Image (cartoon, rainbow, N blue to C red; front, side, top):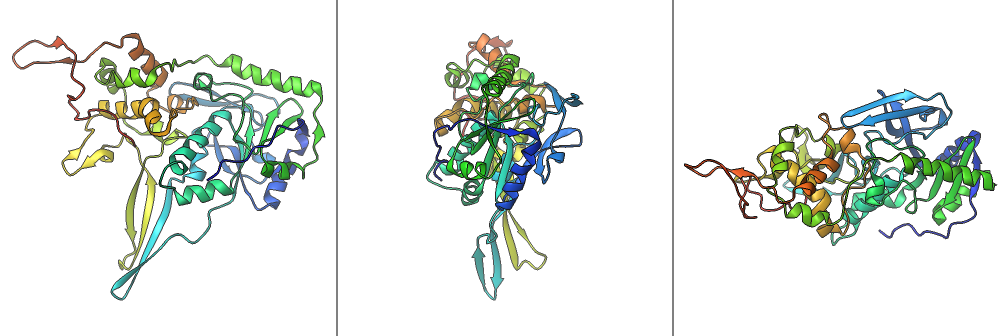
Length: 406
């Protein structure tokens, strides 16, 4: 799929806050299913919306490692929050999708791909790190020799309305990954919320056709300056950092570091980090038949490299312990992803930190390895006391010589 064709940034426009509903109405009139942030079960999640009344007006999160809480701010901001457990991945790469169906006719089978077109989504409220995550998934599903047809159809029909961050959470580190918090590209329409309205930017021809149907005004210099101040506030609030210099070689040269043992003592292998991650793409395929066995659907479901069965072969699981599975996830995300897709698999959204039940922070794990890159595991030798030694790269108690692709 060709990436959205961007136009030169036009004069910034102004949309009064009371007219935000008109944007939703125009999108629905164009046949889009509008998906945006809303509050459900004390979390901000993405769901179909019809009205601005469903947006999280006046809500903000408090996020820390292993902690997420919502609180009322008392203001009238629609987007003064960061990210909940959902990512836009679920609409472009659904958790479950039927990729093929088969029906038995006499002694033969007839195979058919899905015939129903996917929904035409308008994604409202996409943040800069999430734009970067969608671009990463574009490389995964569209950039190689094999194109994912379902992803392509969903991606091509989707309209993206980005919203710039005006606050940051304690788990955000997008500045380290050069993915935000400012939305620079990859959107059809971009919004920055200020006190009484939105600064509107047009990113594509498709976005321009929508914007022309809104009652936009020319943004005043004061409104533009206010938007810049709000965006700067988000930058200033980001405290978490991750040094990415030479990170691929740092991790790949320390596959037997003692830190992998330490983190394995805390990790539950619950898969939360991979489920909330906006770029993880592991999946598994199963055959689901009816009771007669005459009709079978081939179904693709999300999977995780933290699952024991994920690396199962005829001889058993390749990564049989949590140490090897956590190492696989982190080294693939931050190191070998560069080899596969010429980019990092991390966009600095911080979801994996917030939604880890035990609060494991990947930035701290990288920093610990960087602090003592020569540290090695202590391996006992038969009949001798354990000694510190460097282990050849092809020897490991979990039979993994190096991280591979998902």
